[in-house]
Length: 411
Image (cartoon, rainbow, N blue to C red; front, side):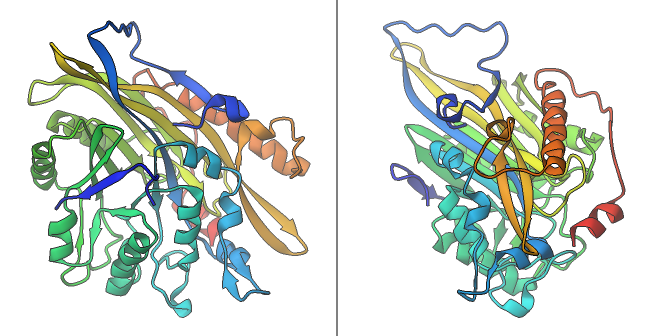
């Protein structure tokens, strides 16, 4: 489901603040840069993109989604309060941290995730267009889970990235190109690993391999994209700042010619940067990275893990009859979101809330005092943390806890 005007070619951001007034704006163009337009310079292409982090389905979420009356799973309510923001973007991108094996007996949580197709249906109805499937849980349910996840996402009208059911599928989708509003985008996706699970015979999972990535970006450049966007699953879980491997990998990707890098895996938000970088081809351009988009929805309730953001940016192309085209990454902003788990008659309900709409706790959905305070803590943490968007990443770690603690709280 790409928005109606989208033309998709598979070859191998935010909603306006006037809607709810809840976008936390960071910057427009590069500091000190002034956009000037003359009669010879026209905006000839523009696209808005919204990116969200990990979509997970832990055991309690699976139980909460079961509708006893209708005897089916339903996750649509989870996304009901944020879907307008995703639909407002021309493209919405998510990281699906589970598989879709299609059999109820295979539905499970950590350490091997398998979920009903209803989560894909909910993502489609929430406005998601592109889904990253190259992550450490891609092989959790073997060949069936990997191949069927791709099939279900495509059937729902979404584009999967980074995993392939066989060599033919890989050759067909190795480079994914999307054209919209006179902007041409090339998408690539990679993961650091698959939890030491065997990659199913004939299937392909894009792993972080520098030689392969260099080849892929070179192939992507041959498709003449305006921007190359890389989704990458990497980093240290629960660390709020990127580790050395992340920094080195991002520098490598920028040098190879990537323009935008969207990171996932740590389950907490990590900073973003918008800066000029000169790649190995000599092109000096704006480049954007967010090291980790954090959790969008999960049952991880510890501090820093219980919410995320809708990360928005606009890509525009300025055309000149005399000088060709100039490309810009602008209007970079984010909407903090927090996962509220309501307990009603011993039945849990999960809601992704746009935080600023709930700051006064005066909505129809009233938060109990404890939940309200936790949401405010998340909000303050997020604003403090992501205000570093245009500064150097220091590597300082304010808060961490063991993986075992986090997993035990999530099951």
